[in-house]
View 1 (tube, rainbow, N blue to C red):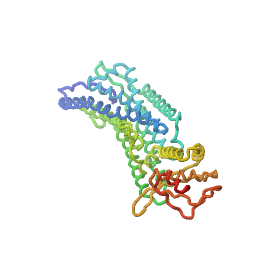
View 2: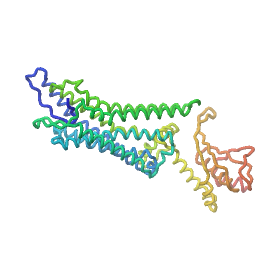
View 3: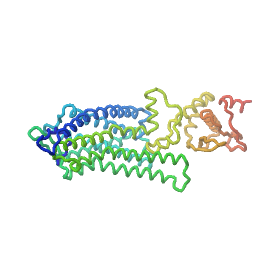
View 4: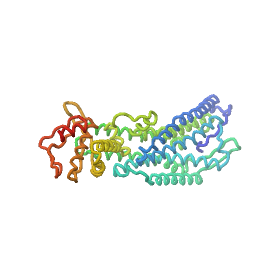
Length: 462
């Protein structure tokens, strides 16, 4: 049995043959024509703008320092190319009723090679992205990679290997026939070993790697807190992560496997010896092909829109405004597990605010304070606590011990600015040795919520 990847016009059945039904044949041919005219338009209308918008967002300066952006941009670009080439071909088949590229062996093999190469490349992109998530969990330094070349090297190697493998399959296993100009076929025998190699290249191999990598991600997250009491937030993040992993794996399997399934087993479900059975089989195969391209049209939703920072950049792009409020802890944990996000923008905004307040209060010491503050190492961690029956967030700021005799003043300025910015009370030091370093106070007091200038004037000059 020859596969019907290249569309062929099925001639009408012989009315004298009782096994063939003319009405059934005409019905399935009509359904197949309508399907080939409508499905490509829907996939193009949804997939191309969605992937193009994702590329625009991922190319923004705030996103490009993340190594995942390079892989996601490449994935979306190949999705657009794949959808444009494949859907235009299927749309022309639905409108014209003939395969315009299959009238000579060269064009037939070229189209087949290009189509299956793009199918393999887009499938392996998902594997590479998931593998990068595993590498980040093992070594968090792999996330920050401004100007790195290894994503482009990896993508180039992936494209080259997929193209060479499909080229070998095309020249070794694909045959071309044109039976008296009526039936055009460009097929790969289903009993050929090359059929299984091709199936492993674009479907089975990527599916196995996706399942393994997603399983490792879940295992690493559950192994982090082994032996410790699991908080409610940790359980919530783990549940969301399990759902995301399940959706990404199942979406690939559901969309990719049917075309490989019908590719080799179509004769097991349909009687291809009759014209009506052949028309039914062709409709089923075309439906499975369109289902495969649903993966190209929708995978940007799973791999981009689950990124909270990505969604914020989309809102900013369309409205010109940044979303109010900080990223919730659960969203941050999800971004951290999937894309290696850190709270860099908060740290940048805090340092900018500190510099402005210091230059206003102590204009003559601005440069000294800048050099001192920038040399300090800060480590910020969010924790949840229960106060007066209400849940609130506390921010713990750990500062390196001052190195200069007067650096206690820098700590005072930094602490008060943090209190003004967050609206929370900040504990300061009461007893200070001017020629020494900061010493713990015997009784700590909350800084009143007043302006920085008023507080320093009242405390030191009145």
